[in-house]
Amino acid sequence: MAQLPMYAAAPNSPATELAAAITDVATTITVLDASKLPDAPNLATIGVDETAETVLYTGKSGNDLTGCTRGFSGTVAKAWAMGAQVARYFTSYDADAMRGNIEEHSAQLAETATRFKTKQAVFSSSKIQRPLCTIIDDDGHLFTLTNLKPLLDTYGFPGCAAIVTDYAATSSNHMNFSQIIGLQAAGWEIMSHSKTHPHLPDLSEAQIISEISQSKAELISNGLDVKGIVYPYGSNNGLVRTLSKEYYEYGFAQYGINYPPLHSMRITRITLGEDENLTLANFKGYVDTAIANNGWFVLCLHSYSVSETQWDNLIGLIDYLDEKRAEIDVVTANEAMSAFGNVVEAWNEETDDYFAVGANGEAYSNAIYKNFQTKYNTGLTASSPISSFDHDKVTVTTFLNADNSGFPKQSAGILYTYRDVRYDDFSYQKWYPLGQNSVYVRFWNNVSNAWQNWKEYGAGVFTTIDTINARTASDLASAYPAGAITHTVISGVGQGFPTSSGRLVTDRIDSADNGFQYQYWYPAGSTDIQFRVTNFSGAWTSWETIATKRSATQNIASTIIPAHSSVDKVVTANGTTINSLIQAHPVGGLEAGLVFSAYYYSDGNVVIRLANITTASITTAARDWQIVNG
Image (cartoon, rainbow, N blue to C red):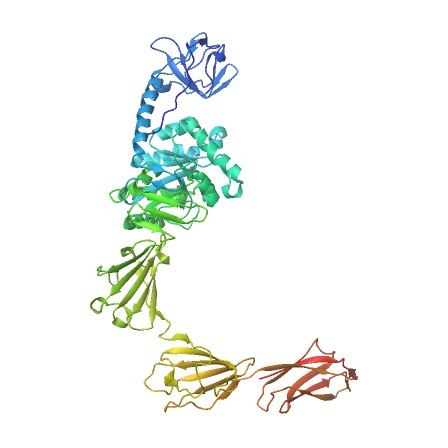
């Protein structure tokens, strides 16, 4: 229950009079001397007998009492004649507020026995985690009161309203504080949505403090009980959350269903009305997911701006929640925190390091061997769905030969299962068959609600790295690890390889014979690649060059090319043979009217033929030519 606002008294209750007659619905009341009455907001009593009326005024302007709520606290609003007495008397509301607030304060003191907060951590009594749904409507628009509340009232569901206090104070399109108080009295939770609705991360520290602190102060001063904040646009960062924690017990952002451990200052929501692609089936699915996994589904609304289709979806969703009320509770955020909040929470909002004991009684941390558990003989099988595993944990399960059905290789092995904290589509399994080098992986498909097919990676082959000069050219294939690709660096000693230094790559297939193994030799500082294989006796064949590529730059002096003639220029190209593929390129291009070709002349030499296709001679400039052979 919220603390009721208590209004200042006036010593000896000095009286004034109505300056003019008023009707029973007038919200501005003019008196002869408003200085006799306390500053707004406050109470005034019109009349002096059992027919007297109590009025709540929220402003004073000269001798006018403005923003008046007539017939306050059970009295009857009526018309009054000029001259009727007006004074600040002690009323039944004052007595009720004092008694109620003392009782509420006593309850709050009792609550500290089960919950207290330090700079480092929040401690609470043990919880009973259960499926929950909370409905939060942002901005405090009048539509909340006129349309959304009647819809929820039909089903007996509470809601939450996130209030921008400047809107409440100045905008005729939004609820005023009197209406918001009435909403709270009807069982709704009121939360802060900042003072002016900015993107909080874009502000300075001082501006953030002003937004979040003034909003809460204005809400409390108007008799509202506020424990949570909804970040405008869901936008937050470490600084925003750190500062908000000084004023609020919890904060709401985006996007997903909540599971232990709950990040109290970054509780996630799912928005209805902004993504027109989301159907009623999608939102029913969120409810079903929360039920199946003991999650907390928080619905984000801007009810005043949703399309007709999305409003129909909202009605359908509320109807579905009513249908499922035996399986999921619709509660306010504060009620949800009582059931779902962490028992212990220490969260560094700036670094996101945390230690928490969730509502499920389990400990979580990103710093001390996070969320890792081993299970034996649990009854799990290859077909166990992702819901059989805990959220935000890596579960390691051993399987013996007796329970290996459905796993690759039909052998004993170890199963690693990772279940994402919010999205099951990101969950996967790895299977390691006992005594084998193969690894298999599969992902969960949230659409078909089933595991995808197993896929092998590694294909039973692994890579080993030898020490330098560990091998010689005469080592047989059988000397290398079976089923492995072995890399060996030979440095300066030759060891019988084609050059003194290079890298040897040996591929030995795990086979009954040795006729399928091969080696590559990569000479140091060269693009030559050499290759050999084993024969069926296990001996290596001779090395053969399978790839050679050399590049050189040669200069050709200025040359006169007669009309309709060609001139051959021989240039050096080391490594060129009759089998070489030769390419040549003039650096900077050729004069117009010239074409060229390049071809083998002799080992180590290439011809560049320059042809003039015009009717006049052409003199070429001296230029470099790049020759590539391989």
